[in-house]
Image 1 (cartoon, rainbow, N blue to C red):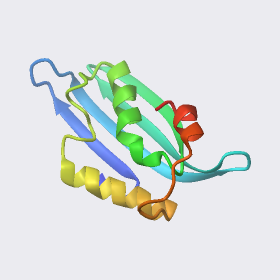
Image 2: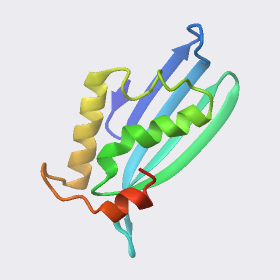
Image 3: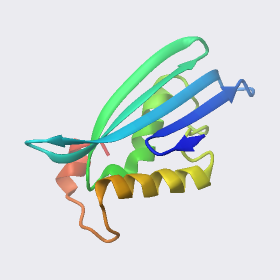
Length: 121
């Protein structure tokens, strides 16, 4: 389920997949040194284990959000083939557009390669 600023995924214990849920919350933050950032908070419970992962992405690299969210949940035991983002492409597209709107980003804007490294991409 997607709504602006929040994505929720439930997992029902399909063989090889833990039972539980993952929630992704995101919002714009402004940092004096780094500029505009998108702050992500990934929370959930997989097989009875609660977790929270938080990270920031620079304005120009925030569109690679699926990669860092996938890394966060794989660390918590979700198989890499069960990405909470790419599971429903319609919701991925909506999340992408919501992030673009929140950051007032335009297609074709340059990416600072240093920011890719800083953001762990």
